[in-house]
Amino acid sequence: MRNVQKWLSVTAAIANGELIFLPKYERGSATNYITRNKARKKLQLSLADFRRLCILKGIYPHEPKHKKKVNKGSTAARTFYLIKDIKFLLHEPIVNKFREYKVFVRKLRKAYGKSEWNTVERLKDNKPNYKLDHIVKERYPTFVDALRDLDDALSMCFLFSTFPRTGKCHVHTIQLCRRLAVEFMHYVIAARALRKVFLSIKGIYYQAEVLGQPIVWITPYTFSHDHPTDVDYRVMATFTEFYTTLLGFVNFRLYQSLNLHYPPKLESQVHTEAKTSEDTYALNSESSLEKLAALSASLARVVVPTEEEEAEADEFPADGEMAAQEEDRRKELEAQEKHKKLFEGLRFFLNREVPREALAFIIRSFGGIVSWDKSLCIGATYDVTDPSITHQIVDRPGQQTPVIGRYYVQPQWVFDSVNAQLLLPVADYFPGVQLPPHLSPFVTEKEGDYVPPEKLKLLALQRGEHAGNLNESEEEDEEEDGGDGEEEGEKEEVEEAGPGGLGRLLQAGLGSRGSAGHFPGWLRRWHLPENWAVSGDTKPCNPSLE
Image 1 (cartoon, rainbow, N blue to C red):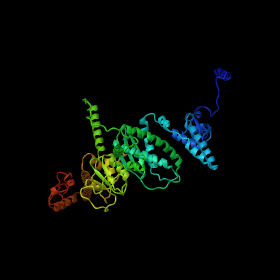
Image 2: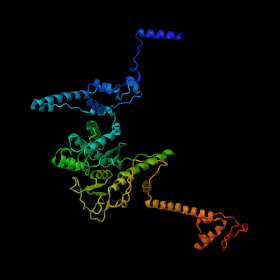
Image 3: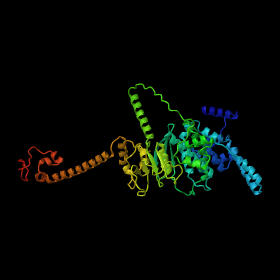
Image 4: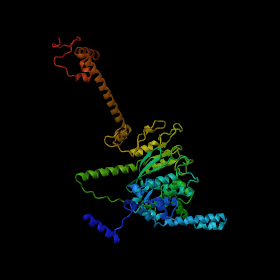
């Protein structure tokens, strides 16, 4: 009876239009996704423009939990997007710019075909352009959000800045990436924000702390390379188009936080402008860009801050755990400030065979002064004959005449000293010496993990201990292990000899060592019965055995 009443109520609801039954694959989770082809038709875009739009807006495909239901029972491979993301793209103004650009290309092709050169020039002057500023503000509402997502942007810009000028990438994009990369390196130098460096087969990994946010990026080695054929440079160029806009915003904000000129100016250029009354920025000429990229000069500030006494914060006594936490925090800050001044007071000279840009960037980030041969690159500040040079970085032993008063070290000494947060002994890094392993600073061993002996030596140096003490302790442990093995062998020999042979062994021991006091420790610790004694003959003096 209840089922009949339920059926009658459902029938009445259908008749009144209050209840509508949907087909099988048009309800539930299937309504949350849309295929890529349907999304393209909805936006009226080609596949290349659709990919470009999704990359710029940060929209990616999604894998449905029940793919067969979303795919209407089919198991064919399809790409799905959230339908709310596609509806979000319908209101994007860049879509209209894409359509205007297609019309522009069609008109330009027609003008070239008819040899209407005046029309060609007019069309090029009115080429449709678009900006990505609103997309950057939309994807990153706060500046901290932009810093957290800066890793990929820096890696891509540093990669494109090393590309050769070929048809694979626009020259303007390469120059823009190079300028933005140099600007960011100058900020890291001015802020002393570099923390870790690691040399890998892929490139050089850097970690900087910017406004409390750790940022890790990789830069390729400066080797000449050919473009691989299995890489889609159009997709990479689209990512770079967005990343350059993002990095430009970030650089401007970071330079403002340090009271620096943006676009950056060199200090020497500011003095020159004061004399000639010209307002020329550092990036307006190729020579100025080379001077800026040398990383050997400091940037000019908008207003030079006056030295004022810093107000000391009031310290209130804390009890218990709070006092311990404050003490740990104070020690951490002191160690960090000491790390920032690692190379202060040191003057380096780089030989032509070492990676100049990486070493100059690292040395200047920790307060050191660096120079190189004038014929190698612009921006050299002193010559190799300068008597104030403390360290000369070389990578070819026996190529130079030694100068008394300076250290000749290999480039790895700079990287390892930065990671160890102290100046390592230079004896392990002399030219021609086999270098110690280059340990990764991004690996943190937990309790119970294997710690390599090189890492133990670094930890001992950081604690203020001498590395030789660790080697001596290891040798003593090895000797003790070897001694224990000898004792066990001698014990086995005694057990095999039995009671009758023990006296002969003791007799031989007395004859060879002179007295029982010189017996080995295992024998002195051997527990014998009270009625056992050693006589002059080889028989044991034991009445019970006789």
